[in-house]
Length: 157
Image 1 (cartoon, rainbow, N blue to C red):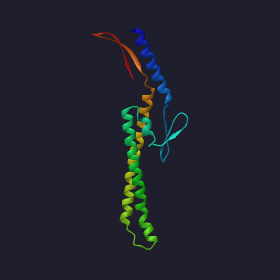
Image 2: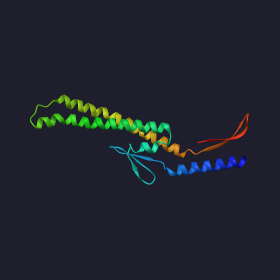
Image 3: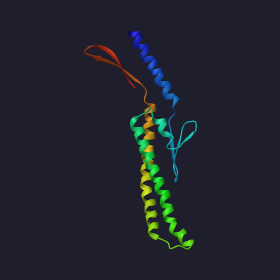
Image 4: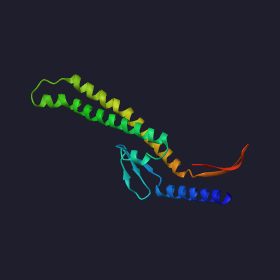
């Protein structure tokens, strides 16, 4: 009984240690244009490439990274369409058409909406990476538990 329990604890802690060493923690670098995610070996990831990496880890981190990716995509769409709408009246005027400056105001409004969406997306992505890194550091914990049925080991992953 004790030998079997010891072997189970030994191999589970060995498996947990190997699994944690298999995936290295991520680091986040930010510039004015975008967030960049790097692993220990300096391989770079995009925000959308992090979703498969987070699949087997903390559920909350996966939810946050998906929300961050969706907000980033929406902000990018608002930025692209906003720039197009803001520049359309200027281009219309240069080719001799009557410009519609209401479209320009709508485009500037879309660009303004994209800024808080992008900030929120960056915040959520950073929180998700922090949760991911903390889940990598978590190792299986074994403890001795006394219950009415007897003495036993408790193993938490």
